[in-house]
Length: 113
Image (cartoon, rainbow, N blue to C red; front, side, top):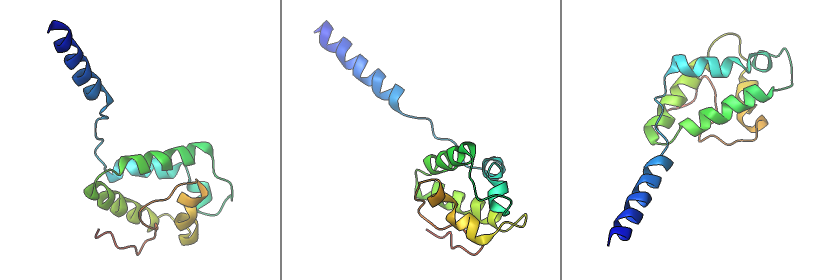
């Protein structure tokens, strides 16, 4: 009986440790992630750095719930609207990094999901 209880506790502990804490999405937090791609987004270069794509992957992993996706959509929409960012460049950014987002990034995108 004691062995069964220990196994049960170990299973519960491993489940708790496997759950990743949810990170709150804030636009001020997303901005620096996208800034690592700025030379590409404003047309200075056609090459993307590993840092840029790594941060885009991080952005994707932050979008777990519908609310997360909506919040990230709004943050990326604000980013797309500023700093002389080329619309085609920001729309192509996820695919250039080898990932698929649930929306196409643009300054006119609809974030009502």
